[in-house]
Image (cartoon, rainbow, N blue to C red; front, side):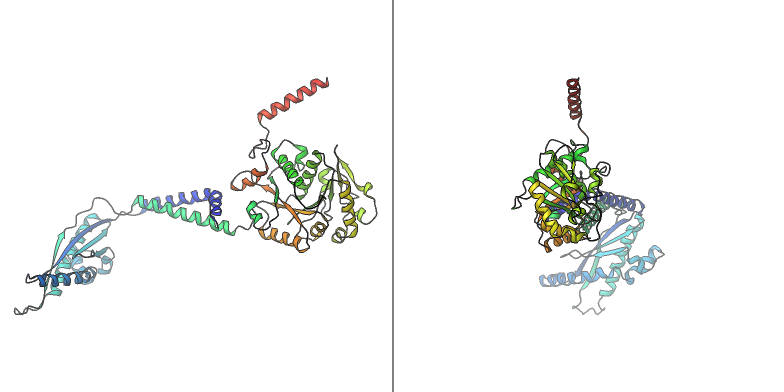
Length: 483
């Protein structure tokens, strides 16, 4: 993952990350409230040796003491030291249980031993620390005691002196509320970012333009925003020509006009990876947008399995492309004009038993050549690429294929398979059109590139007050002129 990917992850998952941080703080707060306070008391013991006082004896004694200090510190948690403590204080615990609350350490390059005791009772913590340091002093003197031979000068008597007596602590050392909250915050942040990264890594759906660009070098010629009312008004360019979504189809029209295909013909096969990606409504709205620009356009329903163009355009589709390809009808008999411009529609006709063979036939190739001579744009609505081979076969005879990709729905593997299906038959890919693009969030950038050319906001499908006022004024003037 690149830095841009991590930024995208943070932008997409910031709500979840913040939620995890709040959960971490909440858990830390609950732990701090439930946890019984612990108090810590410390006592220090100084270790020294009794020597004759010469410089060499002092040096040897100091070295000897530093070497033995760590050993003495280890003795603190042994039963020989703790059993007298238990007896003197009347504790109802074993030496092993008491050792769990005691820690002994020897600071580097010193002859000090620090005894730390943690207990829920502050007074008991101080008493145990003092009793333990005193018990250690007695035990070491017993262990290091030399023989009573008065003439012996080899042994060095070790002396332990308590230099710091443990005081009763006034504030608990645990729970440390600020530290717990900070740790809870960091833990929640780590979990939130980790889960967000894993979700992003495992997400196999095409979310934005960058995902498409990783699969194919073909250009992205348009982006259509998601419209929850698309089923109610599929022909948005005709139903609401001032809407931002209609403007995105006009932008697609402009991009298509300047698309360099290396040929003068403009015959495009609109297809997709799988069904329900919006290819039929996209090609229908594109045809209307091209017609409104004065182009001669023919829209052909080449989906001979599940035809939809006739239904969307409100035309009779009993006869159409199938009848034309089998020689049962002439072109003039089945082509139907639509609207007041130069848009014509060729429905699918009867569903044949062999769609792939018909679309790949010589009659189909001759029909494409004939239509390219009569129209500026020949648009085909073809079936998806992965379930059947119809679109790939048809695209080989046309100027190129335009692949519709539904953002957040199409899987990357599906798009890769669709691109491979076109490349395997040598069909050129003219470009991609992204549909169902979100109007909010980090992935909405793609739609922003294609929409808003006339000042329409991408977050509001409704007309502004100024636009409504202008429309009312124009309508009033038109009615006045008619009178």
